Image 1 (cartoon, one colour):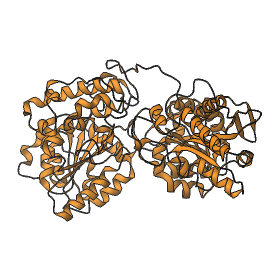
Image 2 (cartoon, helix red, strand yellow):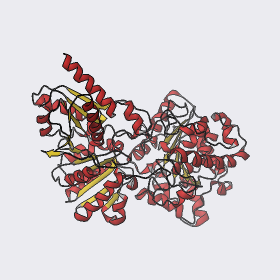
Image 3 (cartoon, one colour):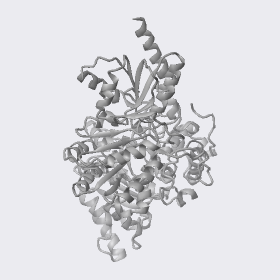
Image 4 (cartoon, helix red, strand yellow):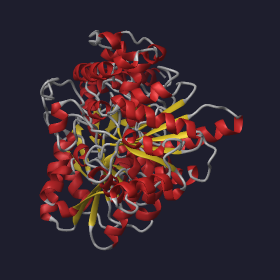
Length: 636
């Protein structure tokens, strides 16, 4: 449900019901509007949770884009999409922020259903330049005068897709394409790698004057501050030959470059974008910004600068106002440290997300054994293969949704070589407020087809520890653990018996059916069994623990019952239920199977319990459907 809390809007922001209202404001009002926007973001997001740090850093940058360009005629693409809150407010949606990331409310990323100003529903990083390349080429073919503006940053330039796109963009000089590099030196954590060092050199060069206005008179009459012009002027002023660091990255590709610009100076940003717009070809505008600008808690958060706060928080201190419970990520983080202390071959890899994946705890204890590769999941997997080839056991910790990007590397670089790499997928299943692009519902269907891949789905803290240790013990191929976001069950879901690798959670003396439940939905299945028992239907509930390949013991057990049900929080097509049904067919066992899973569709954002209810993955819904099926079968 959306919130009834009306966000507090300053007088200028309250006057913006559509983008045209913002564009009609007097220039003298813009600094006050920037202040209102920051106060609004802090106060509003404090009630809902969300990506506060990145958006506080792009206030003036976004304002400048919308003053210079005419969206939606000119096409603005945000990379990553979590930087779009200011864009949403300026395009008339500020009054709807009370429902941000809640079911039926505003999405936390651009959303085409919300506004014609939202072009790309992107949240995965490093995609904007490829979108922009295609958009600009299509515009050129049609003879359109529209511009494409790609806002790339918050670590996205560490992703390989950006450089593949730049290689293609630089081959054309007729594309009306402006690339705004939002350089805040960070993604979730400080941006890593050679690119980060190169950009940092610009920030730290004391002889460099980032303000474009300071050399305006020196470049009067030049339509664009290009490589040769800017280098010559700068060398003459500072006595430093070729001091413009980005030449090797951007200008040598043939791309025009403006910057660095103070991304919080609205007049400088506007002037730079006007110049870029007038050039008529691909242009890089390099803006230096400060993540979390204007909010003390973000500035004091050295790890992530308040990148994303998942729940409501105190707008003064930044502290969560909801009770903290032990999380799945926290349990994994502790166990990773414990295993690394016991095994010198264990190393960890993360793709720009040490904190969100729990790898940060090991990074603090043993920094030499953790590798943050930036937003580069494909590289992470093949690098892990190299580590494994030389005798280590890498643990690749990523969000489930981002693991999709590295399927080819998992198949050919890891699995085909039978290398011991363990993948730990956080945020598997329905994750809630972040919406469909962040749902980890595909991993089981995708990765269970990888030859030699073994996938575990822990149901609680105890089985997470056990199955992680079991995964690390595998030395002849890849393993994968998947678990959701949020809190682990307050109590472990205890087994009444364990046989042949299966945990029996409910086992009456006689039973009418078998329920095989995966991961955190094992507890849901136990509750469903209780409801069924009250209705006179007896069910055995078993947790297979390792869901791919389907355990032989489970196939044999399923053949002993007149009806089998599976419960999982992944996609139904190709999921665990599908796999068990196939295994039963292969064994010549004719047993009807009900599979409770997630439909292969785009599901809206909202709280996980709400979405599980919509999907029929609650004890009540599962019990009702099973009871109806057993009644039907008994009558026939």
